[in-house]
Image (cartoon, rainbow, N blue to C red; front, side):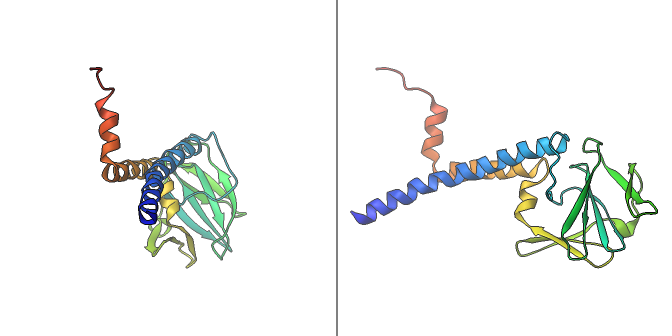
Length: 181
């Protein structure tokens, strides 16, 4: 009896996993939609998605994010210290640094080879290597939740997971109401 109860509790709990995965994907997409459209401009660090350019200046590293229309500035330890919002509606852009070290935006400028992003993944961490030798890191989950496409892949994985685990539920959903006898 105890084993049957534990088994049914585990099945019940498993039913929520695909819903959580799907819900996370849809929620992330909605947040990214607000961010990409420039409607929401938070002060916290955003996922390093669609990196256009990485440039070092003194003790600062500037990383431009095309989709989010912003430049995030990091210190020598790889911590974000400020952001500059660029109102170009998710279009590619580049930047130059003025005499004081502040970024000046250029729409569709040419990015020098040594300022293009160099990225890699180690374990569950995503790294951006700056030209000055500093590594900026983020948890890999940020890459799944960032940008316009990846959240939908996460939502699709949740649906596929539900379909594999609970095919009967989808069969009932698709079959529609039963006809009266």
